[in-house]
Figure 1: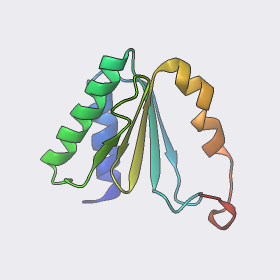
Figure 2: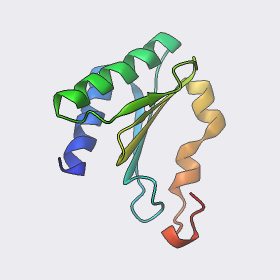
Figure 3: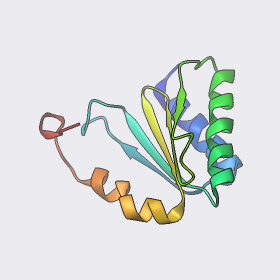
Length: 115
C-alpha cells in the first residue's frame, strides 16, 4: 500500500478517535528509521490505550498485519510501529517534556542523523 495512503488512514483514525494536536513530521530526508513520524496526544491512559488499539485494528483492515504497539505498560506513552510510519501517542505532560516535534523539526541531512 502507498505510504501516503497509510499516513492518511492513521491521521483520519486518530482524528475520529479524538486524539489531540496531531502533528506529522516528514522524516525522509532526516532519518532512515521511517518516512514519517506522527505525534498526537490523548487525554488519559485509557484514551492512549484505546487510540493505539483502534489504530492497530484499522491498519489490519487494510492488510497491514506487521504493525505493533510498544509501551503497553506505560500510562503516558504508546508507540505504534507501522514500519514506514512511527506513531507516538503521549499524555500532554510527557509530550511537552520530550518535545519530539522540536527535535525532529530541525533540518538535518540523513547522513548526519544519529538514528
